[in-house]
Image (cartoon, rainbow, N blue to C red; front, side):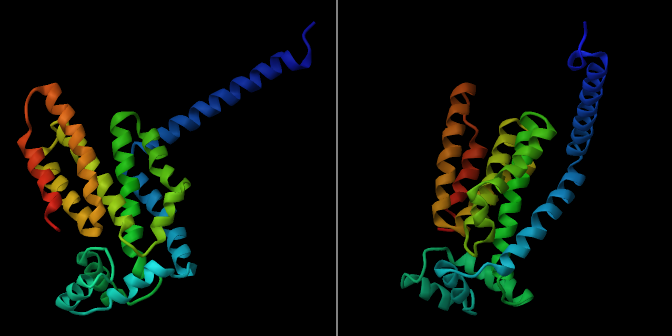
Amino acid sequence: MMNAATGPGVASNAGHASGLVRQLIAGAEKVAASRLWILALFTLFYVVPTVRLTRIKLFWDDEFFTLYLSRIPSWTILLQALATGADQHPPTFYYLTHSITQVLGTSHVTLRVTAIAGFWLLCVCLYEIVRSLTTPLWGVVAMLFPLTTNFYYYATEARGYGLVAGFAGLAVLCWLEVSRSRRRRLYLPLLAFSLAAAVASHYYAGLIVLCLGLGELARTMLQRKIDWAVWTAFGFTGLPV
């Protein structure tokens, strides 16, 4: 005798639920495949709460270095201050922050605009990287993943680490695209720019090229051919130094 737990009604409900799940997944995949929609939704989902958080988050010791050094109006005086060991960030980071505050004013938010933008760039690059390797839906998962980690802290830190993360993500994306021979005229200059910009945000970002260099070395060994254009792009890492 068939009981209620195994009756046709339960089987029918399970079938409907399974069909609904499939429809939801299909809908999510359709939205995830649209770069425009994903970019707009993620930007809204990320920027609004992050800006609100930066408004109420107080500055701490390191951020005061950014505050005071970015107030220096002269490039020469800034270089002199950094030469005394005032801080270890490159002058370009402070000059960029200074330029932003000149236009938008000085506040908890404007001093952290670079961090917010850099972290956003990292997430977008992760979406593109994982999307190209798997599916758009998994790309969205990769895009959202940094928001669930402690690393999200650097999206609200008035230092260069958010920018480093963003440019590092861009460098990896560009190197992958170049290695697949996709739009090399676009991605080779972007690779050079992203590496130089990362080091211009923090000197330790030069370590990024070591990781990419190992990957390119493996690619060279597999193809038995040196891609001189890629190694030339890697050379731009030392430009800000």
